[in-house]
Image 1 (cartoon, one colour):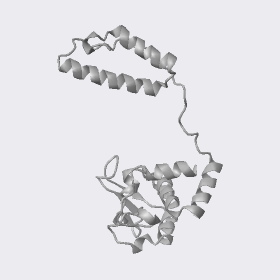
Image 2: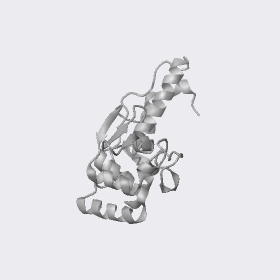
Image 3: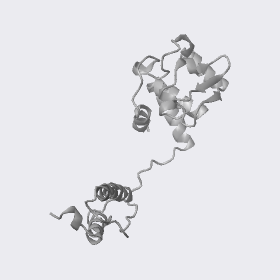
Image 4: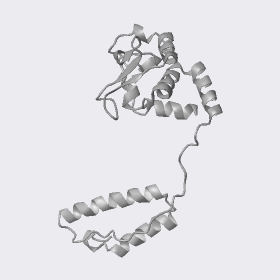
Length: 187
């Protein structure tokens, strides 16, 4: 119930103390509050509704939760590949591409087309529009060539995405988090 121009630095500090001490929010969440409120105050200052941005010397939160997944050990990787080879051939192929070629699961893997694979020259073309670090050619090891041949990737239309709906190459682009979600479920 306070007008925007009456919100002081002390009030903002008290709010952040409440978020940290009473609500026990994680550091990342508090940082997001700081960004959002800072952006709001900048907007109000630009509109000349306030004279100063009351965000000085705010308390910092500590990291309370470790949300990172534990690293996969060699035995875990072996179990993972054995499982997906039997139960999810598309995720198996995507994982092999990541493992052998260091392809990123986002745009590089999702938007890879059959025409980007040159099994004869043993290379994969990462196109400028899909590569995070730009256009590049990656050499394919013989083991990956054999896997691609087992999946008969050279028999599909060059404009098909290697990874599409139904577990086979096709015209449908998978969602942005498709591989991350499937990997998380299997892990």
